Image (cartoon, rainbow, N blue to C red; front, side):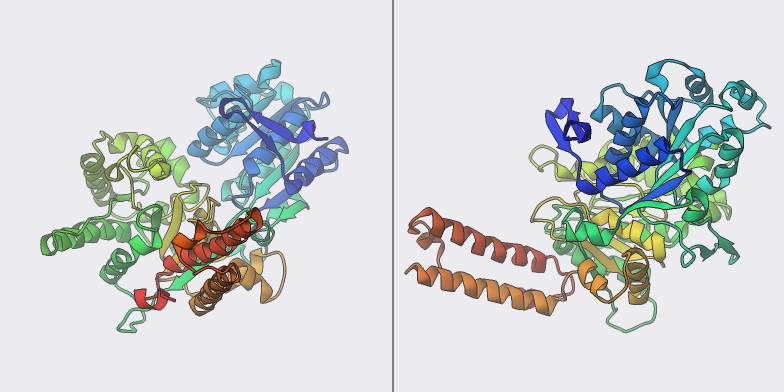
Length: 545
């Protein structure tokens, strides 16, 4: 049992023991396959280790002689690369890259045991099963029609999984489909307005995958301390206007960012409502920070990056990228040449700032560089200078799903988010690091409290006001009160030891029990102090106890 659910990371000399909920999920899929009992989905919240769970499923199924192939299917090229890297970290060279649809087809047809588990994108799989494709891969795959093939879909709430579901079932009648999702599509969040104000309905997760096999919601993960709670600051402009101008948003961010990110230890994403808004944010940050530098020689500008997809204009890779980037896809239909020119200028500024050489014709390289630079925040400034790091990345749709970095702690929201879109975006900030990152920091300029409450109610997996208390950190007055009490408790503890509450007196503590007691009291004070330091809606005077 123990060895079955351990994974050796040889490169890092680590032995991972899977968590109970991951084991239950793996067992539920394996048992469903063994019984040939239809399809199913796993509802495990973002940040709960779905890649490790799916890797273990695929390795156990690889050993199952009744199965011919196991395909792990993702929806984007960057996730294809990311998943392969993760799988190969868990087991060296266990999956290879499918550079195109042809290589995918060859691996599907191969009897080589090394090709039994395949990681691919839904787009390559769709092309392989498209009977109208001029290369007619579908005819080549005819020998597989009666084979038992297991499909595992990552983030199965994506729209194209619904589109390709029927094609897979028609061509592989003996297949079984399993999905992993942190945010299932229910009746309540299935209908949405498109950019053109048309009403569209997403395919329900249950309609595609039949039944839920296991759940581990964000409520469970927060209670287990596997992900962080959220601190949501709904920004109110001083003039009480209904809408906050983009200039006011930039001014607010510049005033809050150092505090929100613990002195630039962490970095942030700014989610804007459209490509035009993202372009304008780039201009405003550039203009306002230059002005502040002129007025104050001690002002240190933040490093700003921006990424949104360019107009596809026949580029199949960009078209694929935009399939779940609804806002960007629609925006790029209007004045595409202007959007392209603006993005070229943004990339040029980025090259100048970070001494890189990206261009719009190799957009993926630029996109990957931004993602890596966000993750490189983990390095100390002595090893990787602050000037090489990104403080804020301006986005529209990109990076709001599927992107993980422990050193991203803040999301500035200037767009309407709701339901699964809200949970996915917020969850970029709540990866556990250590006590210096007490929660995911959300500074909201647009979404509103009702949307947050509705999303919590839908995705908590349970009813009741208690869920909100689990998801969200305490209001500032409560934390200030807790901090004052922790300081008082520390003072009383030191008094009981016959000592003053001073750093020098700590050296005079006698015995392991007294030292351990001091450490526990001090850690409680430090934890609450760190938490209150990052509250962006408090004045400095409010934080002092």
